[in-house]
Image (cartoon, rainbow, N blue to C red; front, side):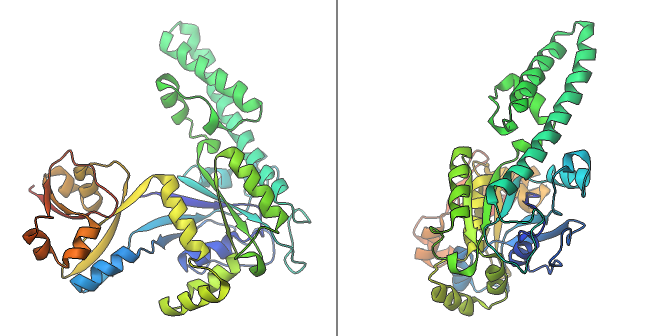
Length: 366
């Protein structure tokens, strides 16, 4: 679908280690600022037990999970909005993503230098968010100046846009993020056109030492981040990026044993991906057959033709119907033929809203 998560944070907080754990892409990891000097790009395969249970029944030639794209965005420093560090390049990269994974260092380690000289999660968060706000303010002021000039013509539509942008500037100048600005039909399109950085949803990722993985209640830095995130209406994931990178290298069965030893049911990566999916408003549907069982990502409340278009534009253009079954019904029946025999395979039209876990065969003609 082209949806992207962007990993952001100060240098040396564990962004590239987290990226490697998510994607196994082998990004360079080092104990010095700006180890990541260009953005790394990879894909996150989405672990889904349903995919494998379907495959156990169908026994296809291959199994293909769905995925999200992830960017490891080079570390930002104070003054980035003025061009310091990678400055404008960093901020331009953020505009490409749909969700920010704001990675925060919540551990002490004399062997891993901190660009600010000490560990302070809330200070680090504010450095990043202040730079994003300053860049947004610059963007808004430029748009306001252009609209002020254009409004001299007396055009009502231009004056209405100027009114929205001026209100937004006042709002952001007070330190408020653009995502919290009251939106109505009139202002939505005006604000969308500016691609503001603080409109992008954010999830905070607390990078903790191994001892705090199972229970981080004693980690004061994590507690502060959680309190802040609650006020912001954002989710928090607690994990150890280093441990997650090690887990990612293990075969499936060994991974389960490793997690049990740590007192965990799911890895931090699994929880992070699940919450990212939820934050982005995504669901999964499946296709199945002897050649392949495959998972597909689609936005929640998508209609059947839109879901078909994820596979190929011809499927959407020539959509006829969707032969659909629920996941639980498919597993209970054991096969497509058995589903039809018990009347659980439905024929749905173009107005059908795809549900999470649907197993679909699209009929089309072009």
